[in-house]
Amino acid sequence: MRGLPIRVRVTLAFAVVMALVLGAIGFFLRSRLESRLDESIDEGLTSRAGQLSVVLRESGAGLSTSGDGGSLLEEEDTLAEVLEPDGEVVDSTGQLQGEPVLSAAQLAEAAAGATFLEVGQLPGLEGETRLYAAPVEVDDEELIVVVGSSLQDRDEALSSLTTLMLIGGPVALLLASLAGYGVAAAALRPVEEMRGRAAEISAGDPGERLPVPPADDELSRLGHTLNEMLGRLEAALARERRFVDDAAHELRTPLALHKTELELALRYEADAGELRNAISSAVVEIDRLIQLAEDLLVVARADDGELKLSAEPIDAAGVLGAVAERSRARAEESERALVVDAEDGARLRGDRLRLEQALTSLVDNALRHGDGEVRLAATRRGGDVELHVQDRGPGFDPEFIPRAFERFSRADSARARGGAGLGLSIVETIARAHGGRAGAANAPGGGADVWLELPASDPS
Image (cartoon, rainbow, N blue to C red; front, side, top):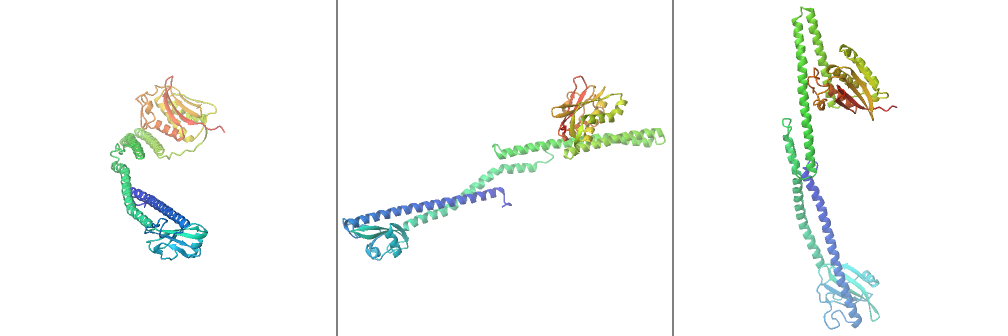
């Protein structure tokens, strides 16, 4: 069954159910007809027995004539007989020729009360015979009146109905199965159309979409869902291509500079001072390549869901103090001040190394692109802890803020001197890995304000 097409399996299931329904209906109709025919025969036998009993009581006449000299039972498919309790035949219709139709046991049963019996074929009748025997008192004498009727007409009617059902049932089942197959095929046609279109869609034409049936049903909703998935895949593919292009562009520049520095080192190999300067510059470019490679690795791991965290309870003031101490030397070179302002009791649960990486990147951006003192602050806001890095420079271009955390995005020349454009993207990646988010805005008094909003830790 599993190897068959869906429409065939649906049709077979429908045919099995339909066959059971037709069989049940046929059995019910035949049983009902048989019951009604038996009731009709029994009513006729009871009526005849009643007429015969009245005749016997009133005139003591036999069965051959009624009280007015006519034939009492003229039908060819009926019989009648009057018996004494010991089984002796008092009178009977001609076809019985005086032979009793009841056995001793049946006679005793009839003497105890009226009863219906089915016996085999009797003389003068075709097919099986249904008998009705009842006791009757005539002139203080107990007699048994027996009337019978052939069941041939009933059996022929039941046989005709059975034949009709045996012929019409399979025809009806075939027609119903063909209709079921057609309905299943029509219902699955949109699926086949979607499958065919899906087989044609490739990375070269990601804008293609699956055909959606007009009816608002399960298949239509499936088509819309698959088209939405294709849209997400298209967006992800576009981001992947843009990421690869930007990464290649960012790698090309430091590699070209590194090659230039090495060529200069070869050219000034006789001059120790020039050689030292060239090697020092090459080392700087190597550091830049290493940092870029590490940033790309963080982004790739985050995309694959493999950015692992070693979560532990962290005091926000301690993290900000460690980052400020690490960046203090560079701040002094730029004659800038680093200020730590952490709210008491601001604690969170996270990976200290990753949080320090994100905050160090923000401080580096503030020292490179901002001006004035750099303020590192921690505040509690509801159930979250916000870690802010603020400067007093020109701030962000308002048009840049909505895309500040996109990969390889850069602001205008006021804030885009150097860097690969991955710093803020990595900050957001680390924030999301902790179950939080990152934000950026221009401070009311001037300067840029970038922060991480992370879930607070239970003080216990």
